[in-house]
Image 1 (cartoon, rainbow, N blue to C red):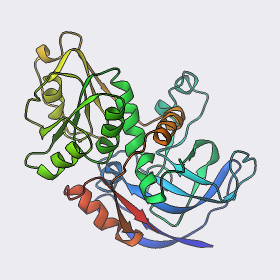
Image 2 (tube, helix red, strand yellow; image 1 turned 90 degrees about the horizontal axis):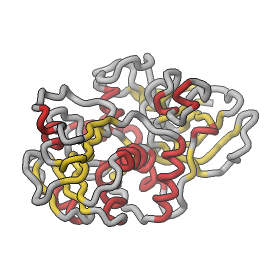
Image 3 (tube, rainbow, N blue to C red; image 1 turned 135 degrees about the vertical axis):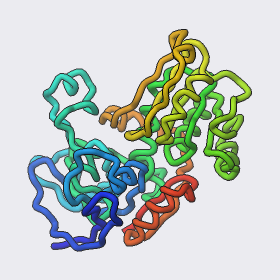
Image 4 (cartoon, one colour; image 1 turned 90 degrees about the vertical axis):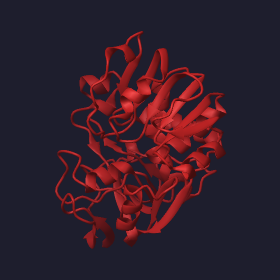
Length: 329
């Protein structure tokens, strides 16, 4: 048996369309027929060569929604036909000091979907049964795909900010537009920061409930209790720090960021906190999916046929997307 896939054979080069042989299933694995796979900025960093230690030729994609086609030995939770989601964290050892204290996202032996194991820019994918997630019934496949990373990483970033009445969000893309809806539903006042001149993104943010939207270099009309940064632009860090109140928190939610420029200690002083988010845990996934089942999130998804994956990445790279691109085999 073979399946079609879009493969990143060399960093900095376009994806190549090819046929691949279906691998046998090891104990605890499931084979999934892919129905939709979101296109994440992490995929862009992978293809552009900005992530270290990638495997040689890899199928990107870690926002995967599909149906279980086959179960390997020892799989009990899932059965053929179940709809599941495959996130970024593909496997963790379960025994190291990080896994034992509930930080499997920091496991040194962890594997990652679409980075160190093949992902969902394909007709099928093999995943560890214990690391896939249920998908709330209220979302169709294309709408559900962005929940698997934009939603999950956005959720962990939002949760790490702690209680905040006023919340700034820098970089209003796939993750931001989902988390803004959760924040608004939880009674937070959202302030959206976009790239200069992006009026469409600002209108989009206000349409989702933001009380203010402007450019990243602007000062919001109110001081912020916390700020989330989803754009991979290092100079946003001192900008965000300068806008949060005493004791406030700035959380960097991306896997890659350009160099952070020097900034005066004054904007970090008064117990402001600067922290990053690395990957996610299965507990994050279960908590977020329960929240997504409760809150009717509008996932702004733009479908592309699988063979147009390079076009979808290009649209993401140039900022032509509002929301998230989703590949459909």
